Image 1 (cartoon, one colour):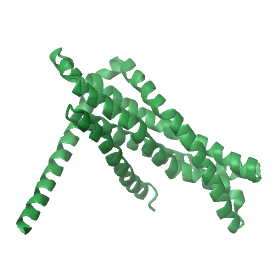
Image 2 (cartoon, rainbow, N blue to C red; image 1 turned 30 degrees about the horizontal axis):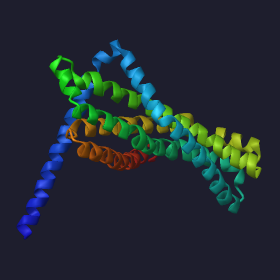
Image 3 (cartoon, rainbow, N blue to C red; image 1 turned 180 degrees about the vertical axis):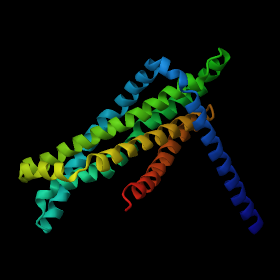
Length: 260
C-alpha cells in the first residue's frame, strides 16, 4: 500500500517535471520563431485586434464597477478616520498597484485565453496545423507566435483601460454621488501617485501577466489531443493554471517591487 502510494507520487513528480521542461522548451521555441514577424507585422496587428475586441468590453465594464465599489467602500472606511479627502489617492494606488493588472489578467484568461486555447485546439483537431507542416509552413511561426505577441501587447493596454475606467467610476461615486471635494480628489491622487513606482510597476506586472497567460493558453491548445473532450478540458486548464500563475507572479513581483 505504502509502496504503491510512493510510486504514484513519484510518477506524478516525474510527469510534472517533464511537463514543465516541455513547457519551457516550447516557450523558447515560440520566442525563437518570432524573428520573421517584424517583417510581417500585419499578422500581429490582426491578432491584436481580435484579442483586444474579445476582452475590451468586459474589461471596461468590470473596471467601471470595480472603481465604483472601491470608491464606495473606500469612502466609508476613510470617513471613520476623517480622511475622506484621500479617496482619490486610495483608489489610484489600489488600481495601479494591484487591482488593475491582476483583475485584467484574470478577465483576459477567462475571455481571450480560453478563446485562444479553443481556437488552437480546434485547428489541431481539424488537422490544419498538420496541413501547414506538409506545405512547409511552420505553424508555430505562422499561428502561435503572432497570437503570443498580440496577447503580450494587449495586456498592458487593457490594464491601463481598466485602471482609467476604474478611476472614473470612483469619481462618479465619490465626487458626483457622495459629494467628496473634487479638487481634493484629484490633487491627492496627483500628489501621491509616483509615475514610475506605481504606474510603471503596474505596467510591468501587466506585461508579465500577458506573457504568462497568453503562453499558457497557446500551450494548452497546442498540446490538447484532437478530440472535443480534450479541447474542452484544455480551456478549463487554461483558466485554472493562468489564475494560479497570476496570483503567484503577483506576490513575487509585489515582494520585489515594494520591498525596502
